[in-house]
Length: 393
Image (cartoon, rainbow, N blue to C red; front, top):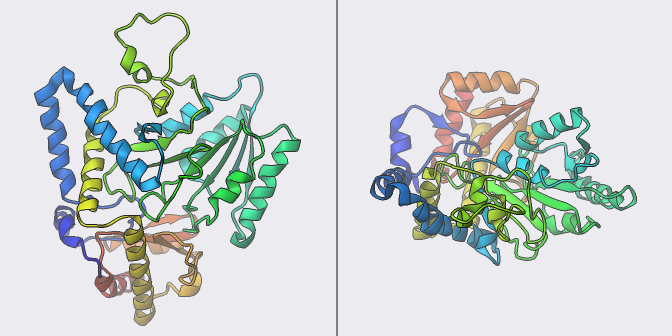
């Protein structure tokens, strides 16, 4: 049985009364991240102006290598980092034509970074947005593939987006390759939001790396906090984004800036501007630590599922109002994420009761979500369920 709780001692001891069941959102950080944060400060003091050569050299390259290894990418240089995934959406949309609205296909289950921005652009007629409902789940892939194929008869889509894991329910899209293959136009940007997939479950992009953008980051399952989002950028798409920061020309800053604006050919073409590099130290520290204890995406995924099952069984034993039948994606569905989503009309009220009892979950409309990570152990799920049941009354 996997038990890594001792590696999270600082977070656990900082608020010992807190029961944190939101390991699909703000994960606890392992202890190694504190040393990494201090190392970033020490490097800044030691190197001063020269720190950027170190950050964009060994630190950056190590982070790229970690991402490429987890995703089975052929070239780590296809990976670019940013402060958040919204940064990447701004840059991706800046690659689109300006003489007509951008045609976008997505699902109605995408995260706010995309949905808010795309809805606002649609309000002003800057994009034509089509969304495919994710429910019923059983027919989602067929319906989405059919709509993606229709693009060939209507001028084609400029962007096709879907999530690897639907954040509102925990449903995993099992056959990403099928959805990608359904896009007929080779000019279309295909984007996969992998924030609930990266390091949460095994993900092999080796056969999709030449075709899709894939974005995720360290805030969730990498457990390294905010500020280290990343995007894999396939060659040939988005070669000259208009939303381009001065770091995209970092290697040529000393040369005279004349003629057409130059871009890197790898992922660096999507770079922005000055950023806080501390997150990348934490990111690398977590990835190195996980390698040292022999834990990867498969182990993390299996551990979360074991905690889920133990938690639900204990809830039932406690007579809690949350029932197995309330789960949007049931425990008998192997294609589920590392969190549980209970659909209830009183979800917001239950969430408030839990927060009042210092039990951290989150709520999305009528869905109450519980997440399980490496700072949990399956044998503590009984006590967790007892506290949850008591708080709900």
